[in-house]
Length: 477
Image (cartoon, rainbow, N blue to C red; front, side, top):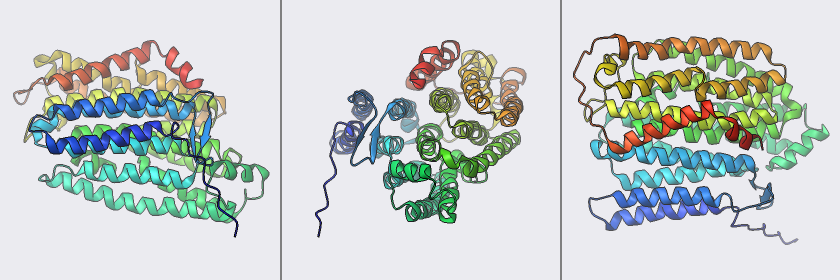
């Protein structure tokens, strides 16, 4: 019997994962020994995220493969690690006053965000399907608990249950797809799968093509693309608002990074097979997301359908499968993080305990009472729609440019049309804020940390729109 060689262990490559795991455990243990003042947990969590971001730069001469090629540190994974750390830090900051107001136990809350970030880093850095599955499961389990962390709220419980049932269902598709591809190629490593596809021996295998279809279904559920989006509006509405913002950015960015790595980098030779499917999903996501958002009266459900439409735009970067596509995907997710956390930060400020004021009509007359908040919300919504010179416009411009470079003219025309449609429901909120009489008194508590997050998001949205050059150059590098 031949000895099985041990994999080469490279702990430096795993530094962000190890750092976040240690700090997540520290938050749980520290929570047991401190009193009612939980500010130390915030400090530990933010320190862990900062150290994880710094430790992701520990490797030079990228890319670096480790663990027998199952884990990679490259520019894609490092950039996404920064996005994960930024989104997790903003989620923690925007949660401080919200958790105090709603009576949420913060020990497990902050540790779950850190453990979820561990899964996100694994997802963006994995070059083995087993590792990708492990990353998705870590992210999903943390989100199931976070969605239902308000245990006394029936809507939160319902959101967690729906998310869990549909997430488990999607995991089955993903796992079956991986099994079929393993059965065809004899490997779970993306590099070996890519070599076999390049050789042409498995390109037309029915099992291979069925595995690709099942992978698209599994990833489609995780990023909430049409027709696998049915969980998103209910979960976004029922989950605590900071969790909704976190869910819309970090986990989605991680899944899209894995999506890009599996399809655009590993299987470009069979893109005629999977490209048409993603083309259809992209167009359906844009149209159904935008048309669904038009019909909403709840601000969180509106933003949920809006996020479905944005997935349609993001899938264009995978369809383009070129270097500009990967750079535009990274830039878009960074810009999207600032826009979403800014918008949800305003939603948190408008709400109060027992009444979150989630109906759009509750924003009537906000500009008269709190003009700065109304202006900030307007900037975030117009940026999501793609109005120049804001970050959303630049992000869409680069993604559309990547698609045009590959000749997808019709797809870009449909995407531009959908961007125009989206202004209808974004401007609807603006009209209520500026052109309607207040229907109730605004009892807004200007929470300092939430205002700080809104200010950071506002700066990021404006800066990435006016000076996108350095970030897009870094992403392209």
